[in-house]
Length: 230
Image 1: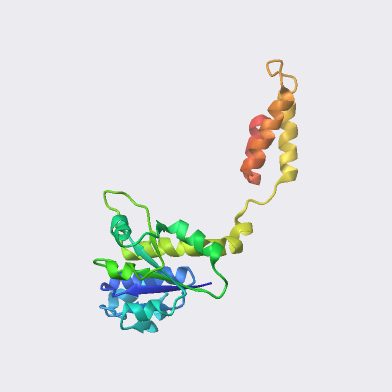
Image 2: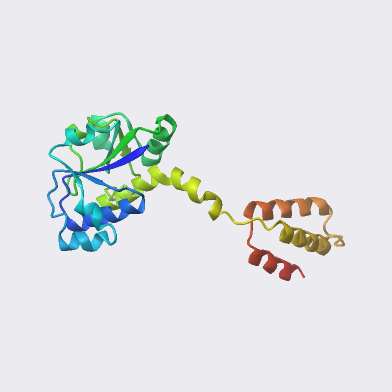
């Protein structure tokens, strides 16, 4: 699946620079921009893009909304105003729900466009109606509308986390410390086996094992528990 980030009439250099940076963080190599209202290579845009300046230098530009989404198999609109989207369109879901639905249904060759609205008024109702689904980011009812660069980061995370989970999941797991666990369990058993106050000693040991195995403590944490028990 190809994720295409589509920005509609961005206006502020700080936002476009920040979006370029977060886009590169999540593997986006091109920005697709409809009728930009900002100098993409302005001083502040470049400053906030950090090491993603090339995304500002070589964008794919469109004159209108229809041209941008017309090249996508699915267009996912975004909004911070849930009721506004509901009024125009029924397929409104939380961002994580949209990502899950697409992950289950999409083939490898599909192009999914994530459409980010204007810095000022977001997407128009007429534009929302042209999208296949609408992604809503749940936020405080006191101030539900996110800055577009912040929203972009959350959306890209939701749409790419399955890919990065496959890549980093095993590496991030705590390595198995079974041999240290055995020492810990033996010492724990020795500390309780002669205590008359504990009736079901094997049950207590079993519970302790389940807790340790579920938590998967590090070698240092196991050593700390062994020291305490000794």
